[in-house]
Length: 292
Image 1 (cartoon, rainbow, N blue to C red):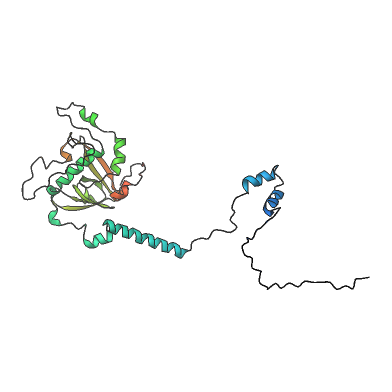
Image 2: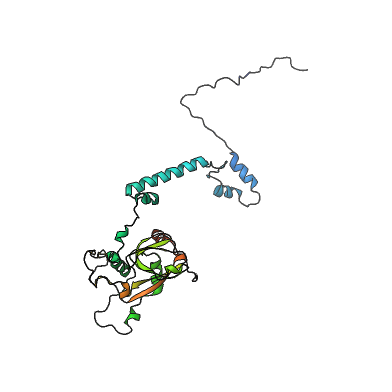
C-alpha cells in the first residue's frame, strides 16, 4: 500500500534576490579539477600523461578567441597622425619639402652668377673632401720616381663603394657618351645634383642641365692629397678663400683636378639615378656594364 502521508515540497523562487553576504569571499573548491583530468585521460599514447600535463599545460594561458584586429579606419587615422608628427618635427628643424622649396624658389639659379671662376673654391673644397674620403697619400716633396704614380694608386676595390655614396657637388663632370650627340663633350663644375640630372657651370660661363638617363659621365679625383700635411684627422676641411669676380683670378687658383695627377672614373647615369641623400643609405650590387 502506498503511504498516504503528505510530502513536504519546498518551493524556490528563481527570481528572488540573493542574500547579502558581508565580510566573506566567494571560494571555488574542487577536489578533482576538470582540466587535469580531461587532459590526462585523452593522453593515452604517452607513458606519462601527468608529466605531460605539468610541462605543457599547467599554468599556461590559452586564447579561446582570435585577437581583435584594428579596423581600417583606425589604421588610416594612425598613419595620418604619424605624418602630422613628422611634419611638425621637420618644421621644428627648419626642413622644407620639395614643393615648398619650389614655391620659394630655393633652387632657382641666377644666370648672372653662372661663372666658372666663381665656383672654383667649391671645386677645391671637393678635392679636399675626396682626399679625406679616399685617404689619399701626400705627394713627395722631392722629384718623384718614374713608378711613383703606380705605387700611390689606391686600391680600386676600396674606392668604388666610397665613390658610390660620395657627394659630387663641386666635381668636374664630363659627358663622354650619350644618346643625344649634343651633350657629348659638355663639361663643368657640378653645382646641383638631382635624381635625374646634374646642373653644371661650364668654362664658357654657361649653365647646363645634363640628364643622367642614357648618358655616361667621366670625373676625376686627385692622385695625391690636396690637404696640408699638418692637418689633424679630426679637423674640419679648410675653406678656400672666395674669388673676387671683379679681379683677375691667379693661375694657381684656376687649377683644377685635371691639371694635376689624377684618377679618372666612368659613371653610368642609368644606374646612378638617385639623390645624393638616397645613395648614402643604399646598397648597390655588382653588375655587368650596360651599353647605351
